[in-house]
Length: 392
Image (cartoon, rainbow, N blue to C red; front, side, top):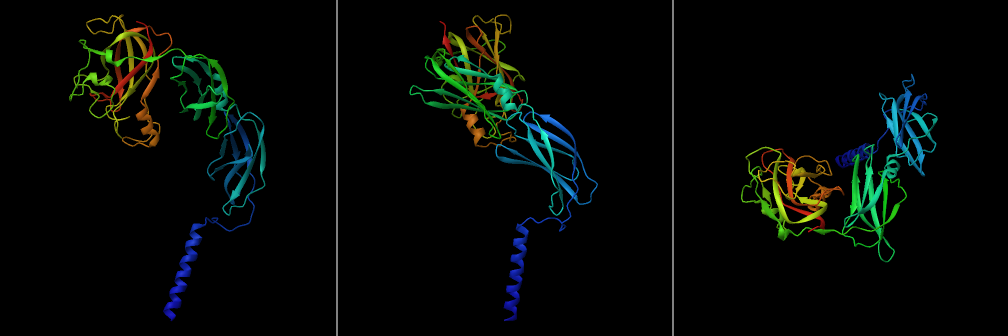
């Protein structure tokens, strides 16, 4: 009986201990109120403010915290006993806000607040919105943007359908300094397009709207494509020949692997069988956790155009640089061979880039591979498509 009672008592002790461990308790039990900090400097930042303060000469002081009400929600920032700056982010505009700055003891006792009025600089999402340039493009519309702060932004592009309903058709998650977002596959009739921006605190802009008429666009007919083998062009290996790049398949074994004769950059040449005014270009890397963005995956290339290429294969005046594709990067930022759902979706969608509107019409394209995932001797990718308007 005594053993049973002792067992219950021990179990009760462990239950109490377990519950106590689940609850974060103050480091000390002391009701003394710590002295206040003294604000020394206020730095205005885009959509944010940074406070620098003097730490009080008080052994009860443990850390400082700042609170500010923004759009009905309290934003909070904390720092340790060894820091003397606090940054509050996510302000939607340049209005005046009041920050309450507290000293906090090891017993989680807070001082009376020191109140500081602040005015942040214009947030990045508003500055980027000012830069938007929305215009008609091949097969739809394109919007250029500048994001000088490199902030994490969401750019959303929409259009109004024939019933008058607005359709959210394209979303870009970006921190690029500059870039573009496009809608494609639209009919060549006047259409209302809209672009709006939000940041990671869900601060949103109005919608920039324009009535635009898309320019006619078609995909170049791959049945007309032919490989042109010039003296300086790269070969193939493992039976993965260049002609696989326009066979309409991205299945395993249906791409191109270069031979290992020379290091990057290397190039190949293709006769499209017709002359096009180019609008955009898409290529697909090999599928797999370490192929979409790593190993021999193509991350960056130049696209050159010609109507009468020199037979010696040189990059002379017979060739014009049409565009350089943006460097492909893994959306998640994960390490080698690691992919999340967003990475896989990006890999399956392919890597798309636009041609400048003033590029000359061309019949021949030359792909000059600049970077791969491992910068080795081999290059691998599966398929490409090119779009525009046929000239002849």
